[in-house]
Structure formats: C-alpha cells, structure tokens
Image 1 (cartoon, rainbow, N blue to C red):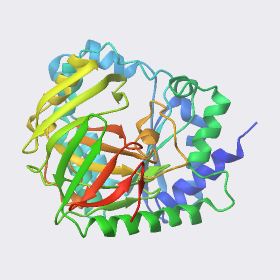
Image 2 (image 1 turned 135 degrees about the horizontal axis):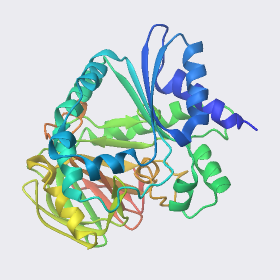
Image 3 (image 1 turned 45 degrees about the vertical axis):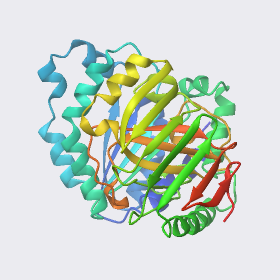
Image 4 (image 1 turned 180 degrees about the vertical axis):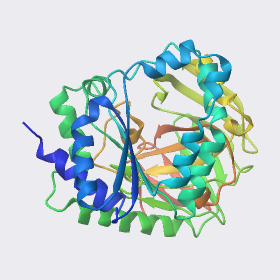
Length: 366
C-alpha cells in the first residue's frame, strides 16, 4: 500500500523546497531503494510542468569504481556532468542507501583523490547556486540500512523521518516558514557581532564572523532542515574542540575527534577510532584543514543521533563545523574538494557573542 506521507513529501519538495516552475529542467539523483519517492517526485514534477531527468544509482557500483579503477579513471570528470551542471535549473538528491557501510574498507586516500579531482565541478555547482541560477535540495528516504544505523525498526525510522519533515502536521509548509522566521531572528542577532566564543566539555574555541552573512536554513536546500550557519573568517579560528558524535563521510567514520586550531588551521588532530581516516580527510587538499562553515542546529524535533548527517547536524542544542569548502553566499573564501560537517553537543555548553552570553544549555537566550 502506498504511503500518503511519501506523496505529501514529494509535493513539498517540488512546490516548496525547489519551487519548480513550468519549463524548469530538473535532475533527480537517487539510490534505487528510494523508488517510491522518486515515483512521487516524478509525478509531481510533471504536474508542475518540469522537464525531469533521473540518475538512479545501483548498489555496489561505487564500490566497484573505487576498487577497480585506475587512478586516471578514478579522477576522470565526465563532460556530460559538466554540461549537466551548466544546463539544469534544479537538482534533487534523494539518499536511500541499502548499505551505508559499502565504502567502509575503501582506502581513504582513494576517496580523497576522487573528491579532489571533482573540486572544480563542485565549485561550479556552488557558483550557479549562489548566482541564483540553480536550486538544489537533499533529502532522505527511509530504508532498512538507515533505520539500522539509527538503532530503530523501519517503521520507527519512517515515523522519525516524516515527523522531522513536519509531515505529521496539518500545514507543514506554514511551519517551515515559521522555522525560517525564528532562524532569521537568530541570524540577525549574530550578524550584529564579530567574535563567537564557544565553551563546552573539552571545547574552548573562538572564531570571528564580522562581515559574514548568517543564513537561515528552513527546508529549501535540505529537507528536513533547521540550522543557522555562516563561514568564519578564514584565519580567525583558535582553540580546541571535541566533537561529541561520530563523524561520517562516504560510509566511513571517525569517533571522538579532537581538533586544535591555530590561526584558522588544524594543527593537531586525534580520533579515538578512525585516526587514519581523519588524517586522510584533512590531507584532501590545502583547504581541508580550515573551517568552511560554522553552524547551530535549531530543529528541536530531532533529539537523537541517527548516523545520518542530514538529521544529526540539525539536532536542536548542537553546533557543527565543516572542514573544507565554504558556501560563498555566506561570504566564505575557503576552497577545497572536501566539505565535512562534524557535530558537537552544546546542551552543556555556552556561547558568547562579543563577550555577551547568548546561548546556554542548548538554546539561544537572546
């Protein structure tokens, strides 16, 4: 039996998140396990007048690529992909993996090599987005693999995902607009300040954001959503941070990460588990040892770690920092083939803006 929540999610993705108009060229990239949502999105996009194209990815192909490719094959960037980035008006990525650990045993240097080779493609995508020429959104379709990562049954995880998207409410779009209004209020406050100082267990770190733009995220580029973010001034990050939750990228993870920054650069890095992976990520390129993003999670409907960053970085009462590329629309200039968000619990923390206490025990108090 079809799940009506899937149809509702498709309607919001097409009409609210991506705001599809007649004639828009929409690319949908998805894992094959997310077929029910792809079907619903395809139908809704056609009804909205879009020209829709799909790229459905089969399990195991990525693993074959990393294990069997020569270095030349691994770093090749298709001319078709370049053309796609220049042509589409909107891009939707539906994550619905059957095995989230498929790349766990791939040499992290191989992962880094491919990321670095695709840096120009990623940057061009970002340029078109920042110019307002391209809209994009990432979402998740519940699968057994994601449910297992979250230590839930599939039905429990489905409820978690759809409720995090506010699909259990009478008017989800109105509520996402309210989220946006509250996040905008926080962003306006933060934009009036320069130095941000964060103190939490094993964490004491400062960065400056004067002149940078804090952005409200409320269901447009991510669905679900709930954060405010910006890019720190590149050489201003100093101090230490201990990340509470595992940091996951491409099916691999590092746990209990501790980083020390000096003048914006990671000078010390340690992980209780996944040390080799952490160091390989930091060595992606020169920009990978700098922060491209700093953010606060504001979705208090998400309170548990699931192993899926789309949800985990939004947990109300947390912050996350991204090593690598900055989003240019926030004013950042750091460039890298990496953008790796890592989450830290602030429910026992405090945040000061130019010396003024503005956040305590997981919530803004302004």
